[in-house]
Length: 317
Ligand SMILES: [Zn+2]
Image (cartoon, rainbow, N blue to C red; front, side):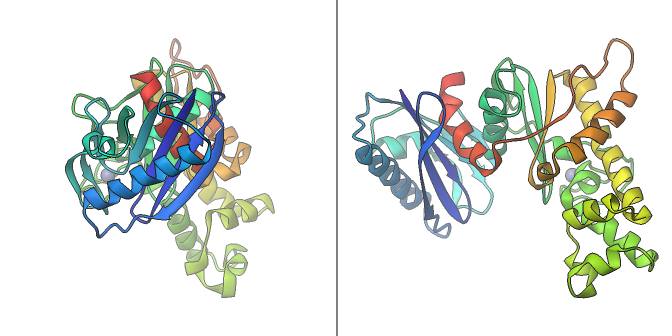
């Protein structure tokens, strides 16, 4: 059996064909043309899926389903995208549109939830049924997997891990609240904290490691590199960052007790440099009976997680 997964974004549509081992054996990327109508975008998407099938001599009998990961809010079983940021998709019945061109079951799911599902099925938490993936990138996102399925609440909009408050009246967030985890645990937050610390400490090597000596060129990697070479300012910034992420992890474990929490997004490139301290600090926050049973892990599927998870959504419903 084969599976087709599509990662629908504001810039590109990425489609992939998975074999029965859930490996991507073909991947195609086309521009989304997000200014167009949803009908036009979905027609292109359907044609892309057909091309992939033809290229591998597959009929509709060989393919389990088409899964589509989309930004925003989607109802997987109904096949409807209710809203998608950066796209002209409002209450669009994606299934009906795709099935005009191709006779396969069609499912839709939020893209972050797809990525989380992929890590639970065949990634960092392979085979585990209860997993939470926290994505640390520009913002903080994620997905909740319960009993092998995405859990997104009663109205498909839940699982917004980045917007739980860890500091009452803290830093303002784009969502309108103050003190959201996202404002402390995202890569953006780490970079901003490092810039502020470097400015206040002229002797820190952070000031020299940034390109052209310009603090606007700060990256998360520079902070890790500086800390590893013994810079005390970078070490302190990073230690505080690990504690913020650990707060988020501990909150998740208190609420849901997944077998594993996986950290994804750009920060996951730091692997054990990130997961080691976060595991230690999160473990310190847990109480008897609710210990952290497994170490926090780094996501392993990278950018392919979205395609893989989308392709497999239909197997979990
Ligand atoms: Zn927020």
